[in-house]
Each structure stands twice: as structure tokens, then as C-alpha cells.
Amino acid sequence: MSKRALPISREQNFPEWYQAAVRDGDMAETSPVRGCMIIKPWGWGVWERIQAELDQRIKDTGHENCYFPLFIPMSFIAKEAEHVEGFAKEMAVVTHHRLKNVGGELVVDPAAKLEEPLIVRPTSETIIGDAFQRWVKSYRDLPLLINQWANVVRWEMRTRLFLRTAEFLWQEGHTAHADRDDAMAETLKMLEVYREFAEGVLAMPVIAGEKPANERFPGADNTYSIEAMMQDGKALQAGTSHYLGTHFAEAQNIQYQNREGQLEHCHTTSWGVSTRLIGGVIMTHGDDDGLRMPPRIAPRQIVIVPMLRDKPEDKELLDYCAGLEKDLKAQGIRVLVDAKPTKSAEKRWNWVRRGAPVIVEIGGRDAAGGNVTYMRRDKLRDGDKIASHTQPREAFVSGAPALLDDIQASLFAEAKARLDGNIVTDIKTFDALADYFGAAEADDEGGAFRGWAYVAWSKPEGAVLEEIAERLKALKLTIRNAPLGQKPAEGACLFTGNPAKEYVLIGRAY
Image 1: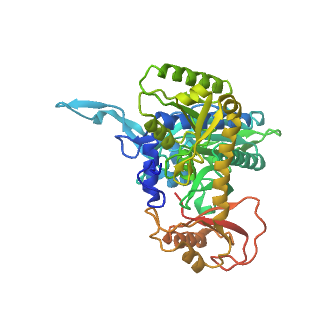
Image 2 (image 1 turned 180 degrees about the vertical axis):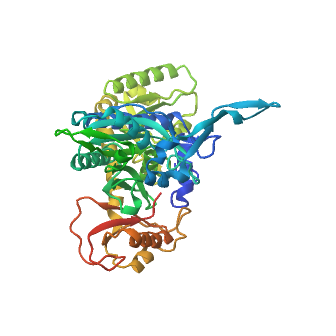
Image 3 (image 1 turned 90 degrees about the horizontal axis):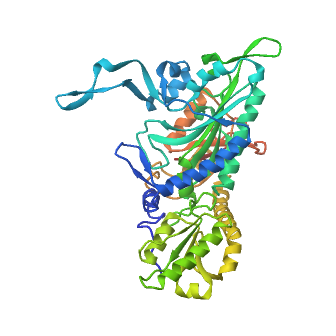
């Protein structure tokens, strides 16, 4: 069988392939509100698995979940100048609280203007800081460690399902500490939680590092990220962790009494990941047949497709499939029997496009012989043919957990080889950098594959850094991060010629 499940390949047009993978994989669709998305059951099931896995890790590090309002008084945002500047162009503002009927038409009631405009939550540092200044009184109250799962709104002009939408879902952690060392340890600890989660659960290899000054979160002293390489060579910022210093504490009067009875400002952090992780999983693992879900986040890890023929024998076949389902569930596996009265080939391709890790097809001969015929979604094809495997039922059931583990490891190994094999380290001049990445036109609509460049730089700030950022912007490039744990830098800065202080990753990004 040589047909492909998707109408377009990654090589033909990666952005269009991505849209087709999301659509045909039944993950999400655009909503009547521009820039917002409807997450469909299969996509929501993936998010639920991400939530469950990550939430446990967050709690294991001592954090507690809570919830803060969607609406934030504008005066709260205005207390932190850098924060306002960073989000001003993305904020949605509520100015009135009711409508009225005028001649059969609903209009905004001018008499219902709010005394103070409300900002629809772009992030929660300001409103959580207001609570922290009430909750923290003494060193005994520290560290204060909280997290919330919520939606946020950032009014993006160019949107793409999961990757960049006006409203998206995320978790945001917020913590307060007695001193810089404790807050910085928290910042790096949560970055490591994200790195381990991305690699261990999403099978998505990442590089953890510090962002340059011009890429910091508004109001932060230090911003750290995990960066993942997509199949088109672009970087995806998959998670961030910020050391906020005392900026927000000073703006919102978050103080504590130390052991000597003196008042000090807290050091705060924030960190988060969002539904863009789902977009990252799609672009990391998908193929020309559609999605390939890592088993640890697949809503259904094994899908059983009975080959029904609308005959009396179907009852025995369904009974066999139900028994197989029961046996697999006893192994702790998320499994589904797709008994819809649809042609089995159509159902198979439906689950191929969705990326179910293992697709089992059971016909009358399988049931009669006590066998199981299955396909691995990570290795679906042998050339142009579908690669199927047949095992005795007992062997398949007992080996199913190991099979899923092998698929998880296989997806990670494939993506890790891509990441490691597409970071160039021999670029020493800006002209060579420009030559490597080519013309700036090779952007969203295709162009030659390029990975990332690992280059030496002198860690400039201020006007020099802004000039560098503009030069990179002309090539549609950004500095992704300075990887943690790197060897000491040697040679000259690619941009200034000054002695290098560290290495940074440069690439095109989502």
C-alpha cells in the first residue's frame, strides 16, 4: 500500500504539512474568534496526559496548585514598567461590564464603563505578587511555592494552531524566596524539570540554556529556556524559567522580616510551559502519514481495529477483541476497541493520522488462531508497504509494555540524532553565518533545511547587543540560548571580534 495519509509531504511544504497533520489528526480547529482554537478530544487527551505527568513533577518539587483571576486591574500591570513595555502590544482590555438593546441591536452600554480597565491575563506575576505581599510576613513563610493551570491571552497577529494563538493554555509557577541563591536554585531546578519532562515524556530532545539580555522575560534578571529542533530545522522555545530578582517584590511591596527582625524584599521566580508543547511534539515526530504520538502522552496507546464484515461471525470477533482489551488494560495500558461500523482500512488510516503508537488489526483468522496482528506507528512502513507483525495473543499482551517503551525510545533516538547532527560548530564570521542560513526569504514558506549554529560571542549588552539583534533579524535569525554546562569559550566573538566569553545557539525559530 503506497498511498500516504496526508495530502502533502513535509518536504513539499512544511507549514502546510503541519496544518494538515493537526487537521487530519483530529487535534484542533480554528474557532469563530480570530486566533483562538478549539481543541478536539484527541488533542485534549494529549494535553491531559501532559498535565498529569508534569503536574506530578511540579508537586514532587514541593509546589502547590492554586488559581488566580482571569482579570487583572490595569494598575497592577502598570506597577512594573518593564513588564508593561514587554506585553503592552499583546494585552486585551475590558472597559465595560454590560451590553444593552438599542432598537433590536446589542451595543456596549456607555453607562457601564468600568472605573478601572481590566487586563485579560497575559501572565500573572502582577496579580500573584499582590497576593504574595499579603501572604509573606516572615522568613518562616519562605519559600512560597505555587503553581496554577490556566488560560492566558496575548493578542497575536500571526497565529498557528498550538504554536501561537491569541488564547492558550499553560501552567505558570510563581515562587518567593529569602535570597538570590535560593531563588536561582529554584529557577534552575524547574528548568531541569522541564528538560527531563520534554525528553522523558515527550521524547523531544532539548538544549537548556540562558537567554541573552534582549530575549529575557520582561522584568527578569535572568531567563532560561529549553530549545527543541523541529524537522524543518527551526527552533521551538519549549519552556522558560525566570529569575525575577527583586523587581516585582519592590513594585508590589513583597517583604519579609528576616531572623534579625529587619525587613527585606523577596526574590521571586516564574516559569511555565504551554500547549505549544503539542505543536512541538507534532513537528518533532510527525511523518508524511500524520502524527506519531509518544506512548507516554498518547490518549490511547493501543487501538484495536476489528475487521468487521457485517456477518454473524462479527460477534465472536468483537468478543475476542474485548478480551484482548481487558488483558491489555490489566497491564496498565490505555487501549480502545474501535468497533465503529466503518471499513477497517478507513479506521486504520484514521488512527495512523492520529498517531496511535500501536494499531492492532484483528480479523477472523487472527481470532481463530489466537493471534494478534499489529503495526508500530513509529515504524509504519517497510519501503512503501505497511509493516505488520503477528504474534500469539499471550506473547503480544505480555510484551506490550516493553513494546511501548521501545517506541518511546525509538522516537527520542530519531529526534536526538537529528538535533545532534544539525548543529554546525565551524562558523567563525558573520558573513559565514549569513552564507550558511542563506537569504532571509527562506522562512516560513519553505526553503532549504538549516539547523542551528553554535558560535562564540563576547556576551555584549546594551546598544551593541541591540545592533547584533538587528543584524540577525535581517536574516530572520535569533540567539536561542547559551547552553548550560558548556566548555570554556575560545577564540573571538563572531560579532565583535572581542575575546569570546561563551557559546550561543543561533537559528530560525517559531
